[in-house]
Length: 96
Image (cartoon, rainbow, N blue to C red; front, side, top):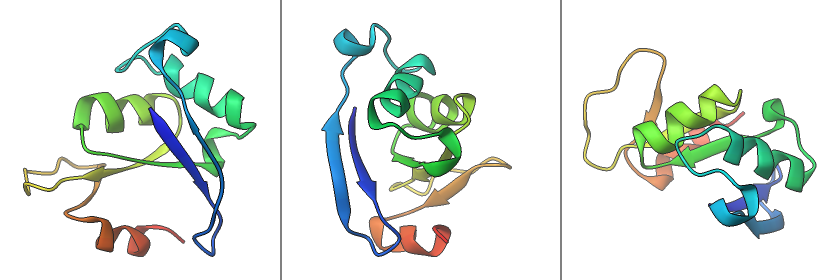
């Protein structure tokens, strides 16, 4: 799992990669997200996860308490409670 930590001005100030071997967990286990938070020194409410897998990215991130945006490139049906964008250009409208 690759992560970029972005400021409100959209500048990457820290980047990293977390893999399942390091974390001792893999998606869709929420523990891999908790490990990434610990490694980055952040709390769940300070992070937004953007991913293209509804189960492995979005549901897993939400289970770890992380706000998540589903990159729904194929315009699949979106269930209630899921934030979805069809492309990266739409992402900023969901980030305040």
